[in-house]
Length: 186
Image (cartoon, helix red, strand yellow):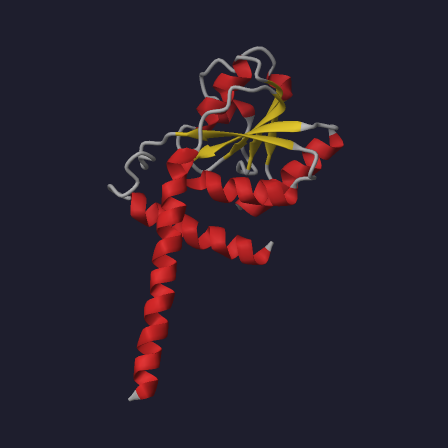
């Protein structure tokens, strides 16, 4: 009987801790702000609505010399990504990174690109719900001297101001699990 009470007590403590960590994680989602600074490159992580459009907008406003789109399909081209859109002043400065398939792999690939091009700073673009994990991974994987400016993007499938509505809790639960997985792993 005493063993069952111990299991229930430990389970309650673990579940309470997980709930606290999840709510803390969710509470941080809306804390990011669009960054107004300039950098050597804008890095867009694919996988979410509006990210590439925001990257192109900042690129056309000359917020960086290069636009790097990380995690594009191996068959993608600039024309297929920017179909019938004005890609601005210099399409030759748009880099399509085609080898990565996860946020961790994005960071490794971007590290290679920015080191090869001797860059000191990036503007990292991803969705609000993804920013905490992406920021953590990029800060861990990039050399300490690289300045990472965060620029979150609002998407149709997630309201960062009311994360508990619609698909928000499910999106955040997945991000929460991945975030803590990476916290343990890297």
